Image (tube, rainbow, N blue to C red; front, side):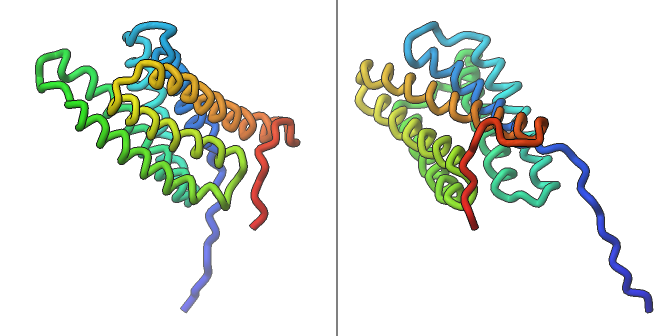
Length: 195
């Protein structure tokens, strides 16, 4: 009986830059609103639906084909986070359901904070750049929940600036992954963790 093993080579592109750009750009745009630069508008919702949402889900599916459980879990989860956030905003405006209560939104944000903290632990084996993204995102969710709990407008504005930092760090990490690969050398360091 022939028991030959056939090796299948993965020639698919690295989906991480797509997922990181989708997350980072959408996070910056939402948090510019949180920091008080402009009102909640269709641009934010469209980014949340399309680039933050759908593009990250596509990246997560591609990560699963690369046998990257961390990337798959992160990108698909945050893709659906953005979709759920758009739904939370839009459904009440359409009159389909009552808006989420303050307590409901606090619980929602804290659960995402807990989830993000658990993923942060995983980044301790990957890179310093991802550690920064997930640490600032964990803080962002906690600050968003605290802002909803206290109603403190100064805290909400500060949270917006912290969210901008988080989003920019994801954009940097995505740019590093893409440019380092394309140029064949490290032009933007990410601080890989030695295993």
